[in-house]
Length: 189
Image (spheres, rainbow, N blue to C red):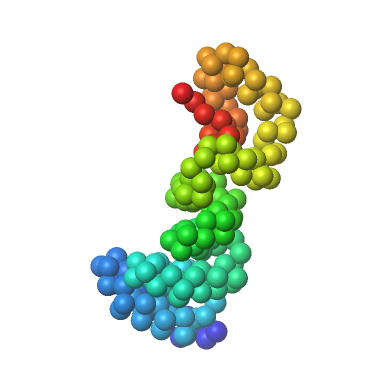
């Protein structure tokens, strides 16, 4: 791509960002579309345009942009997050959970994806046992529960709740326990 095309694409993308921040979604879409015309290989531009489509409730077009963004860059966590949000709005909870899971794999600190994943689980079924069973089918959850050290820690915490404080000081253990809590496998009362 010629430097002038890159510059033009970046100028349009920045213009789109300003319009998006002003909540002028229709004009922002036009700017992002122009940026894509000059540089069709930037997943961020597709993600920004998808954000506008989400705001305008044009989920099909937003989903197209999310798919294009993650196809261009499979590690584009924002694209996976947005795809999850769109699918959740369309009540396609299984597919949404998969997109949120991918976003979490790429960025474990992505609270929005974690919340979206949890909301989909709850929306699919308010039965705690079914939610737990579904969580147990998640390979990441199974890995935590099959780890002998985590089995020992969870048993200690169950037998003596004061042990939880000690174990939660270890960031690795705390992250694993948080995942189990978020998925509904364990509960703290």
